[in-house]
Length: 78
Image (tube, rainbow, N blue to C red; front, side):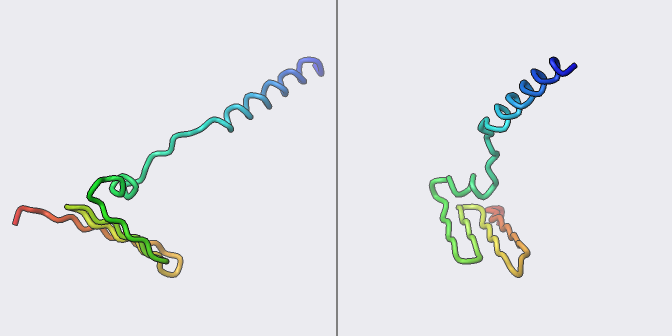
């Protein structure tokens, strides 16, 4: 029993180390996608982030530990 237990534990430890070290691709947030556009304007202040494109404005503000997000979409239907 002890003989079988050691290789199993060794195999488990090695497999966990390989799985935990692999690089995981993180999905980009909506703001990161907008910021990568050519015409995007990004302003970062101490507690505010503003992203402005041709048709969208996003404001993110941290106020007393709360994160507030405002999204404004301009429509050309007028």
